[in-house]
Figure 1 (cartoon, rainbow, N blue to C red):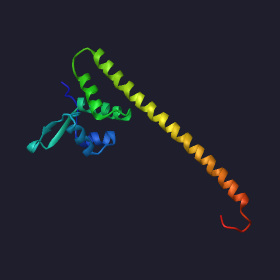
Figure 2 (cartoon, rainbow, N blue to C red):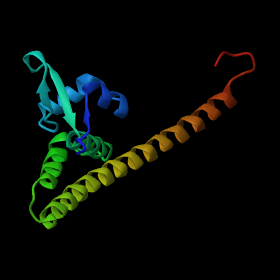
Figure 3 (cartoon, rainbow, N blue to C red):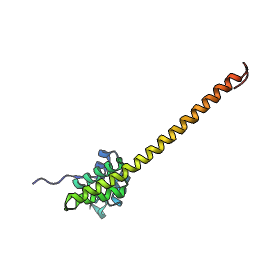
Figure 4 (cartoon, one colour):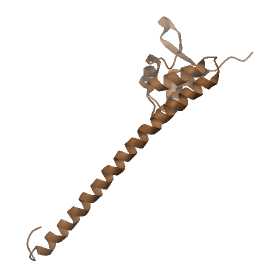
Length: 139
């Protein structure tokens, strides 16, 4: 009978290029629930489920979701209920995040356009100033 794979905190840190502190933080947030072994339960033993949850957490972070949003969605997938509500919740979270990103992008485009206007004005003023300078006069 094959046993389920387990991982140490160092294994996961190495695999996902994280610090052990970051993994402990995810544990504090309730995203990971390792078993405790050894004297005083000092050694964390992570299951394949914890590894998958960590992978999903990092994916959610890359999408820009908060850890709270990630936890809500990941917890829903842990429950044995119908996947319809989970997928609807995920789509709602993604739609909200997409809207935020689109607003940020519109703000950035407006900011960039303003920078271009100021840059054009500054170049025109500089060109005018350079034409009126006498040779040998400092800029």
